Length: 212
Image (cartoon, rainbow, N blue to C red; front, side, top):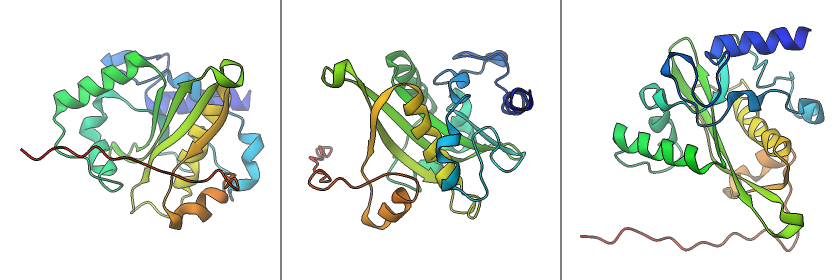
């Protein structure tokens, strides 16, 4: 009963009570916010101290939820710019990408909102791939992890990464993988990710825009 009450309180605080992809007040979510409930936090309870979850994030003004269409106005793109180059993305371009990702499915951009000032302060993305291997399994990839530099000491990096990691588990992914910089290896190891000997190389080809 206590867990049900806490979930309902969080849904109400985040404005997702009774909402699915399209919620009340014409708010649209990238994916069903109810997917974030019932995650297996018991399996990772020893990875954070004190223990926090997406339902009980440690502060009443914190809300962990799917990306919303109106997060364009809540600083989502400036937050991403703390991670990498974003470019000049207009509202229309943002909306088009949002609808394309929602229609395609498999994109679980998850954010942390400071509800006091309605700003996005953390984000991580789970991207899922359908496979023929592993009995036509689903693979998860962790992408675009960022937390606002001014919100330190609240374990928000661990919180947002573990939220989408447990979401991948809930969705039936047979594994979750990521690429990260060398100085972040210790962080990801601290929350359960491992380097597999002989299978930890990352190689890329970048398709840079041709100068006009």
